[in-house]
Image (cartoon, rainbow, N blue to C red; front, side, top):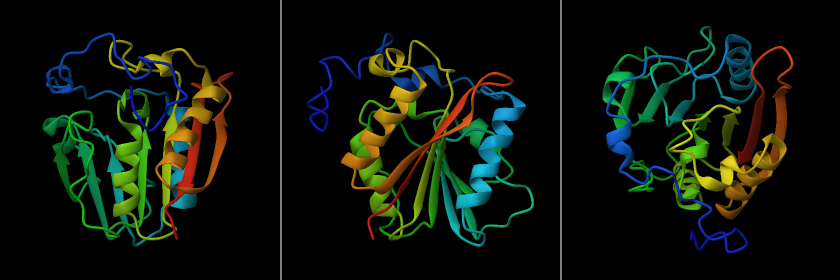
Length: 209
């Protein structure tokens, strides 16, 4: 049980497949996990919140980052589980691999990044408070974190509580993650309602000022 969430049931962060995540992600998957309309909604959100010319961290990234093509950033740092996927991502200036379920502390200096994003990956975190607390420390004051997700997942690797909830309740769960990590002005948005594309939600927070 994650001690940061005593109100959640025992086994909330258990997975059907408890084997090391490094084993599961050893194979590169050069595919997208949401459809084009949902991807476009992610990009629109990034255009609104990610500061041009800033240092951006793409947490739990892959071979694509969905950043606006016409916006330049000082640096885009990628984190993920598969080196081949990250090496294939043309938007990343540098990247590193790390299993956040084994080591939730990001190896970044305090107050060194201007924004962070996490796309369709939050459902796999087993220590979300620790991961987001580490992220809050790496962000400059009042910088945004953008967490987007759909109804897609690898069911053997998504945590139990995630799979027990639907979109609105998943939003509330991610809001709780950010609030326990110290983020401020936490809000949720429905970006796509799922009628003409994959559903998509976003939870947005600000690092402590």
